[in-house]
Image 1 (cartoon, rainbow, N blue to C red):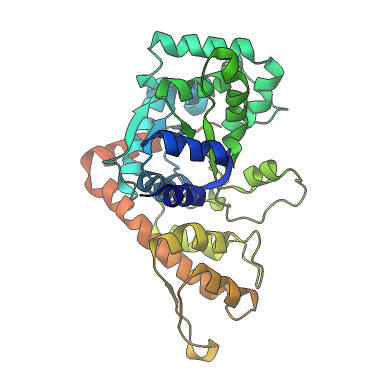
Image 2 (cartoon, rainbow, N blue to C red; image 1 turned 180 degrees about the vertical axis):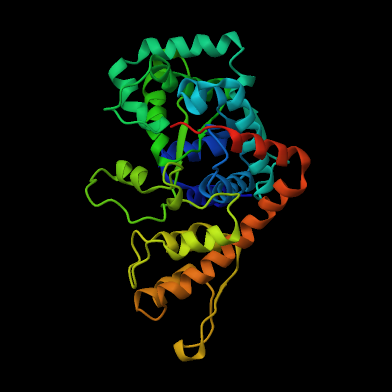
Length: 359
């Protein structure tokens, strides 16, 4: 595959790239650079942005010749007091998260899956953590609290101050040339790039992927683009804002029907986002079924065609929602089947469902 094709694939993943010139140089000098993405195991509520969308973007990175590492950040969840700060429960949740990745279409035969537990017993890891902590101010680390779903105004435990240092150290213990996480994770990798020269380490290329909107009406009082994207994204703490990988067909239909989707509005419309980032990545076209008196069925061949029809008011929001709910259910069904038929997966789901979820 030529350089421009590789770049185009990665640019489809990266809503923002720091920097594109460095990425180009990396691809010219390293045939198979390493990228990684990480998630905290924090319960059974794994939503479609962590499952379906991530499988799409990871598979694109693989196609571009990138070696990809998926990282279950169990010790990070522990420092962030998830699942009551019970590391044993977090380990179980991590194993469950891996089963979701295996079932959702990610090419796990080519992806390396590791857990923080695989790294933290290495002396080199903690040496890097301390070096990073020495090079960053407490104020800077608190500003990074966004990466763990916290606010700068929150009262943080001492372990949570350590979290950004650990996440930065992950880059070097994994050997990642590229960090490929959501826009809300950017602050810690910008810190990485700034302090790396002082520590004799490399500056990772940051490929920040899009954060899928939640289903609820977006906030109107947030101006900062990254803060607004974070506030708009799917959230486990607001279950109706998200479609989860184990939701039933009935739950998917209910949530999609109640979703924010104003007629003719293209911007900040979650239903259209799911079409753009998931459905048109998985299906060649979308068939909208509707009664003859409302124009009959219509076959939409591309996202651009959908936008043109919807913005003119030629497609009713409920007709679009019915189609989206059916297609999302079709994509999630193999995951549900995996957790019903695979004994190991079913037991893990039963275990994590029994855990009390903490923020």
